[in-house]
Image (cartoon, rainbow, N blue to C red; front, side, top):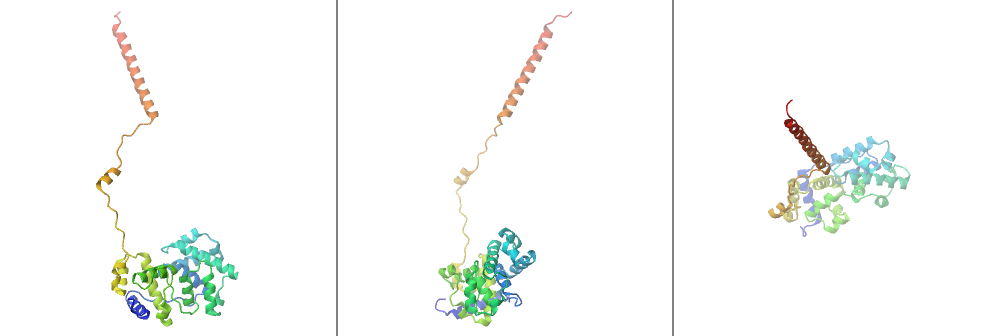
Length: 284
């Protein structure tokens, strides 16, 4: 696929994805801060699970400040519908803390009025902000052209030879925004995210691997493979079997048994001696 242009590559990806997924469009009525928090739940998860987790967070806690000061354990419990609640809980807590320390409020609506470039740089500096979260906010809340990609999307694109190992480490897809038009950005990004969420859930799934093969028929050797279980020899298995040993009686029970036996023997002896004495007596 190296000789094909990036535009043609992503056009093929889009064509394949349309056969398996439906585009998901973000809620335009959400405030910027809620887009930010929703993105924290969405990274690595399916849309439905993220919506449920986000709704649970909003309805469980009194306000954003309570979310900020709550424990990671409690946030994990509230967002348990997510495939991996702990990273999402860390993102939620750290992002709210960073926003509060930066603005002393929980309102980011001014970001819509500011220039996009400085706003993106400011978002990137927030503690807990990932490339996925920043790109989602830029695309869904600020009207910019950015396609959010997380670990799942990067992993899937790496299998079809559209990202390198360095790209995966840096969490970037070179040429993505240039190859996909802004008017198709939300549609393409949402379908790619669904593939990424499926890849995170089970990269060995025949359905996921079928999609990857449709994108790149030559990726068969790069498909994720399960590790074969190690076979142990019969001798080794036999040697490891626990040997049945006779259960030792406790010392106390041994003493009680010995005492009981000796008392029984002495009683028997005394009975025998008494009867023996009676038999030797002469009749009157």
